[in-house]
Amino acid sequence: MKGIWKKLTQQSIYILTFLLLGGIGVIIYGLYYARDTRLHEASAAVGTGLIVISASLMFLLVKNLFEIESEMKRIIAGDLTSVVRISSPYAEIKYIEETLTEMKQVLWEREQKIRTGSLTQETLSLILTSVESVVQNVHDAILATDDNSIMKFFNKAAGELFGVTPAEAVGKRVGTIVTLLDMNDAPISLEHVIAEVRASGKEKHFDIKNYLFAVRRDGLKIPVGLTTSLTGDTAGSTTIVFVFRNISAELEIQKLRDEFVFIAAHELRAPVAVITGYLELISEEKTALPSQVLQDFENIKAANLRLSALVDDLLEVARAEANKLMVDVKPLNSGEVIQEVLKQMDPLFAKKKQKIVDLSFPPVSSPVILSDPQRLREVLLNLLNNAMKYTPENGTITIKQYVQDDVMVTVISDTGIGIPEKEQKNVFERFWRSEKSRSFEGTGLGLFIVKQLMERMNGKIWFESKDNAGTSFFFSLPLVKVNVSAAQPPTQK
Image (tube, rainbow, N blue to C red; front, side):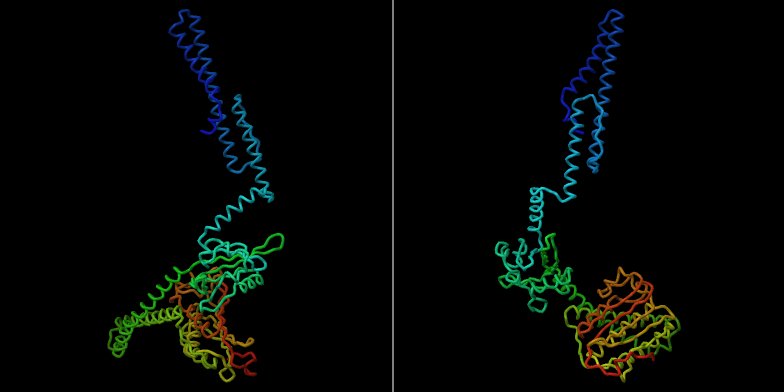
């Protein structure tokens, strides 16, 4: 409103003030100085008239101001097509009406240019300059190459990361400026990464799980995450954009966390062992215990078993994170291991009245794979225990195997609660449990450990699942040789 008042000339204010004061003055004159009755009445009438005219004009002015304010609000809201109509006798208000109309027209034309992409070169240049200024000053290192892997852009953070100034980098082949190593200090070719991104058309990511080292010109190695993406223009040329993020602080935090988990698990092992020892002593004399005490004893024993399992899982996680998870891979008959594990699990399946469909290879004809027998037992026990746990009574659990190329694939399927699609990306994360599974006992570490074991045995693990329709876990391990008889689909036992 203050801006609107400034648009009015002082003339209008003077006229309104003159009429108002003049009317008041005439009335006062008539009341106190006019001796003739008719003059007295005329003064009162004239004065009243002047006040009424002044008030009317003042009311109209205020009304016009509210109309102007309403028009301004419509413009702010994006209404640039409606006609500006302000009825007023004031020339200044008419001037504001014309100005608002002109403003709407100019804004509408600029909006159309933005929508159709017909911005002026000056405007485009200003926008590009602003964007470049922002990108130059972000903390992440950003660089871009053209179709020939020639550096087109290299921001200040990239210069600090690689020890090269932007002026030195731009115009050079990316391989002569950027030196990268993987987690095992093996060289990584950025041009090879470019080829992968071009071939797939998708972004490629290196994060804290598979980070890289950026090697500065002075030899300093800095751990980084990397996102590589492909962009193109209407002319058909493409640009590869690289965003490097220094993850030194994140790695330090992860190291401290892993050390804490490892130390805590080791410290818990001793008291758990003591409790286990006392429970074994008591179990030798438990027949003499009262029934209620006996029930409490069994509850304590079960809780101690869960605690012991949790401590073992925490130690495995700590070893995996420290890359110290040991496996002893050797030629192995997987059929024998599967039968041992199924025999161990039979009482649990029977307790829930679950049906087991065994379509695995019999031991006599099972292909020989490369694996660690004890670690394979752990994988099978974990997957079968999960299938049993999340499948209701009278459900079905199926285990089958088949040979594909140079690997043997084992599949464990259930008819349980399934995993919602939105949660499936987190299945192999540490301590993760789905919303539906939290009513069941568990730590959320089992599948993380299974995945780590499979990777260390040169295997792979994946799954398929539908909410309320069961889950199938697949894992593959390399073959030593394939027997002719084993290549045939196994029949149900």
